[in-house]
Length: 458
Image 1 (spheres, one colour):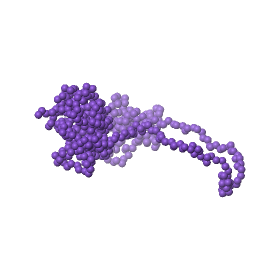
Image 2 (tube, helix red, strand yellow):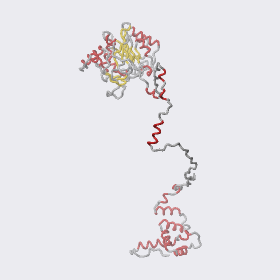
Image 3 (cartoon, one colour):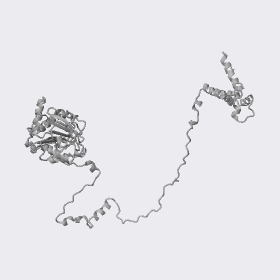
Image 4 (cartoon, helix red, strand yellow):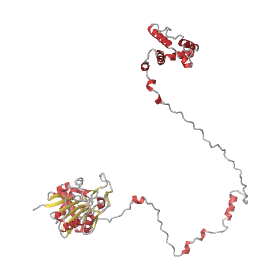
């Protein structure tokens, strides 16, 4: 017996390749990926066609080919994703509405925490709508040494016979001749809405299964929960004509009608005041008038007169209160502002040579030696600058401040009597600096450190 052919369509930029699903099909089918256009000659030898998340639109000729394929006894598995054809950019609903099925532009979200990292990865444990699906699920569990779920109540037992992970899927609108086979359950939003539907006996031969989310059989999620068992059930339903759904469950599925919820985000930007209903007008219009609200009489005068006696006030005619036109003015102040002086500028540190200011005596003497190129002409200034670096000039200045007469001696010994400027007159000569340095050297050489050789004499 020749093996049947199953095609996984890839001409409409389908989002899933279904490697794991193809492994389930391989025992009974020759699985190929269709990259050609959907023509009748392409689908003539095909038994099962899988459309998983098509993103391109179908032409009128392609839709007619798919209709003809089902009428000739072909089997189809159509799967979309959250947002429906609006988000994917396809027009698959045009093909599905011919059989009473349409994918809604919504998403199934778990309303309780079920251990998944995202609310759109909804676990549905009570979504089976047909007892034939439940019977096949229990049979698969028994083969896999897994205990079937037994609960009280037959309808609840059927619903809980299979637990699946339904990630990023949408709901369906199902009308006859289509039959819902799976719902979103009671723990998801929208609650108890169809997520999978089937159409059988198309011209007495073809069968069609529509699922709102292709991620259900995607390679990443097919091993989660009992998705693989559901995949085997769907494949068996499509290939086996003896597998028929229960008629009673098909006629009365356990579903709720769709409830439209307001768009809270959009309404929050259009706030309106509440609308208050008006009261009904009575038959006798004269009852609307209340004459007690407007009245003129003298009944309140006696109580007012008694208040004078109770408060110990004389009952007199009100006298004229003389006005006081001289009102003392508050003490005025001049509307002036205190002067704002200019702040002192910051020190111009960039104008200082910090290396020169903080250099050691050795470094300063070395720089001074490099500056003096002519030894004979610059010898006097070299010795004086060296005394300034070594602090000898400061010692002479300190001694001069203690004895003013020393200033004249400095001037006579330095030979700077005729020069102007106090700083130049108080600056010691090179001879005095050399004399002081010689005394310091002699003092260092002498063993008697207490001698007064080192004291400068003027």
